[in-house]
Amino acid sequence: MAKDGTIQTQKKRERLVAKYAEKRAALKAIANDESVSAEERFGARMKLAKLPRNSAPNRLRNRCEVSGRPRGYYRKLKMSRIALRELASQGLIPGMTKSSW
Image 1 (tube, rainbow, N blue to C red):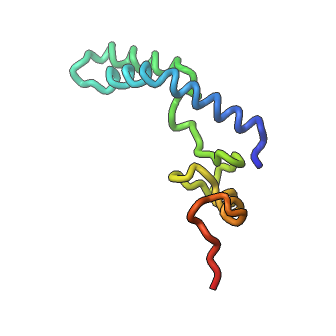
Image 2 (cartoon, rainbow, N blue to C red):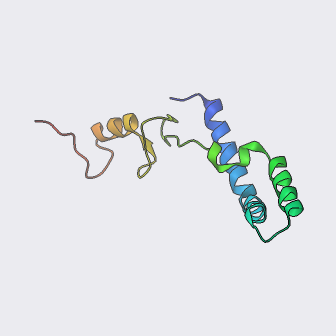
């Protein structure tokens, strides 16, 4: 189980990414547009730099919804491999059986 603080930090980052997504996209479009003057593009980059760092989507980390574990994460299930194995062993995941040979 991950620390509660790291899980809360991740949730805060998710909220900030959602809040600033439109503003960030608009500024990036201006900054990357070659038809706009260099001064306006530079101004857009400066405004982009003033936004909170945690509002950048690349600062998000995939974490298990059950345990908060950051590694061994399956995107399709939004769960770590360890949590998946435990839930499957308990029979809580429909259609999944433990293999044995």
